[in-house]
Image 1 (spheres, rainbow, N blue to C red):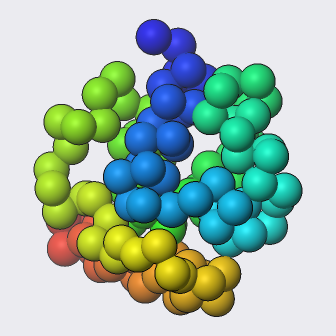
Image 2 (image 1 turned 180 degrees about the vertical axis):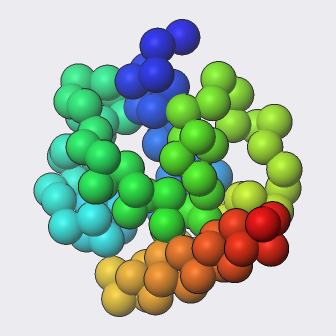
Length: 110
């Protein structure tokens, strides 16, 4: 499957797995929620800065966002924060924390 198709499919998978709405993700990314729908349907390509911000929120590497089957990823890569009542600022804090954890893991692998 082409990378852009995996990216679209996996964006939706990670979002749904984390129980985030398109509205919540759109607000976190600073884009209209309808754009999230277009990303997930493959109607619009995701820019690299937005894809990297998505990776920060979910605590994953970019390569995880484009794998053929995200269900095969190690469970510790999946987002531990799952809630329907999160606000944009909560998502920003989660994204910042996930980014720190991701970098910490990278440092430990060195």
